[in-house]
Image (cartoon, rainbow, N blue to C red; front, side, top):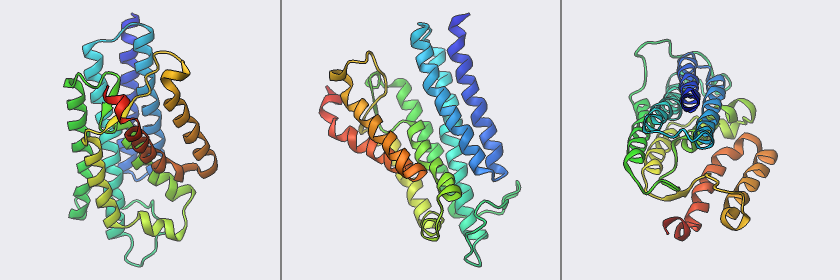
Length: 250
């Protein structure tokens, strides 16, 4: 029975992603973000459960990737898709106030530029498939993990909703920025940059000091900057990993 517990948690992650897809089409982007973050938490927790219960399996690995593709790949793509459409169809009067209006009701009225958003899910799919066959990624990653990439992108609705200013709205709700973000996201996922993983074999400071330091810095940034800190934390995650490149490759 215990061997099925991690897979059940993974399926709950998939459920969160599926709900987030529906919410995104309804343009409830903040609620969709909440379900994505819950799914990411479950994704982290299913790995812990598998190790604690000694229930790791090839099935679990494949199931985890499928769930991640929806929660951390498809949903971020749909969010950027919606935001790009917003910049073309809702801003004719240059009014960003109602950024979260319903404007896509399951029809085909969308800007072709919005298709750039699907680079995110395409890059995520390739990233996850590569992870499943790459034996180098047991203790660290090559390219940013899909949940981290999702956190970077899903921070945008939170910033727009809770920390928005005219300058912030003009920056985020800019089609050039959103298209570049989609391309950058796809590249970052498959860049091959060594990225440290939060897989603690123990709590020894000497072996995990960079993880502890990063967590402390990230926590302080969230306390003082709130949601605006999220994209910078993910970029700092990449930069921190580059500084630790030698240790991660060895």
